[in-house]
Image 1 (spheres, helix red, strand yellow):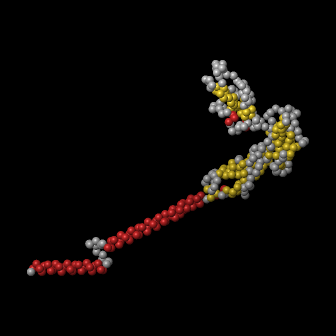
Image 2 (image 1 turned 180 degrees about the vertical axis):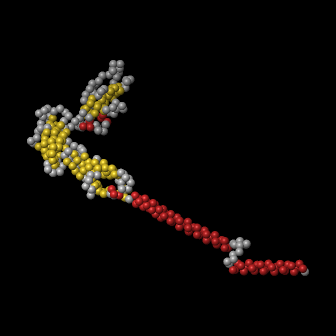
Length: 342
């Protein structure tokens, strides 16, 4: 892509130089040089021509389709200038369009009409090349091709421009689907589970269907199957079928085990209690041992120094000692009275 540019009339061209010039895509807000974009790195080249803003992009891809702008920055007031409206680039590819006509008599085969199409205009008498399972079909040179198609086949077309051959992506029936579900891990009653079916195909998969093993009827349609407020009766094996105009494939069964709600309600608290008991038991034993030792020490101290007015009626020796003290005291009083009389 190329363009030319001149400086605005009010700028002194003798003192003006372009400090930087570059191409960017889609937006002029904070533009980024195309050469520094990761998806263009190594594929963009700016020829060094004065006042000639050319860009060359090699190895074109369909993702390169975009609107391209040129911008330059000068050393004068005004700063940066950008070309408008830019250049719109559309990168296309040959495509094989599929029309299904009939079946071949079994579920693994269909009769199809294939057409090689390009958005680029080609001569009416242009010759096409067709490939089936990567083998060239010598007899087919028109833009259309009718064939029987099995679920394992691939077909593509190609055109030759100059010395280069350009091929279309192959068309094929769905690959064996894979099934995933979320959330992963243990599934408890009352929760919601989403099953997702994934399969590669060209043309893309147009229909997904879900089945449960042991149930002949269809469970759901769509790439995702949501089981809301799941319960134990939903436990079982599920599979999906992916289908496009060239055939269909069925996934392997995926088993879902739904746990009873009471299982988690009671098992979790009991596990917590067990852990607490195991952790607290040694501490309780230590406190009990210390308490017993302290109690024993207090009892010993109390037995050695009993209060004077404390009567241990259950101790015969203590009672005798008390009685003896009483007799002795009485004798002393009698003796004192006699001395007083004398």
